[in-house]
Length: 256
Image 1: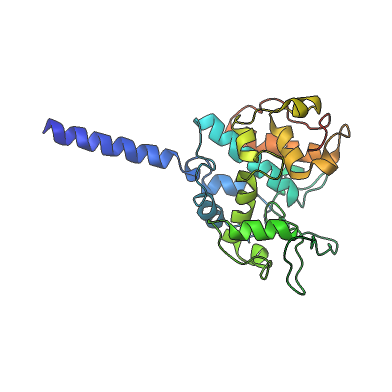
Image 2: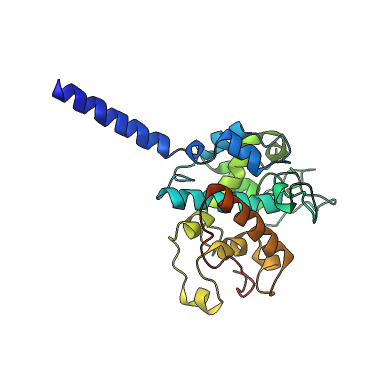
């Protein structure tokens, strides 16, 4: 009888641990609606959860505060990329993340040499991270969690919500060229090189802004793009009940 009880206790503990490692334990459906009050309905909660579960470690690594901080950072950055907010907007500027699905204002094709492009297709920003450039579409589509031909079908990022979220999480989890992954930065797993430190690049949320769009947002003093990303991040940290951490800005960082 004692052995049976011990087995039941162990199973319950393991089950509880598994549940605690799921993003739904941190971001419930109701919280998702609160975070993204004015989102485009394309960005469904179920699509986010399905995509998140496709990437080991996303939002499930570390202690509870670390996991919350990663999700706050992810939504902070992607909300800026898709924002429809403005000064004096209902519920505030930072309640308008995930408003746009595609890049606005007649974007270019973003067909870079050295990588394939399909005739008549454009590789402008789509989805939560606003995935752009043919090389990103190619690498994202080849990822094991996605496995779709995004070179010939880039529009899938704007028509299939789960694929759309997956491309954003792929970008988040994957080192980009000479840049660390956003995932490793927010988890504190990135150790800047001497060159990084000389360029002012230090661990923190600001380094993630540098990874995603440093050429525009970083190294220029106070910048609206960087400030907007921080505003979203702080709102989500507040909703999740965690502090912001340090080094939020990249204004003194040279781009990677």
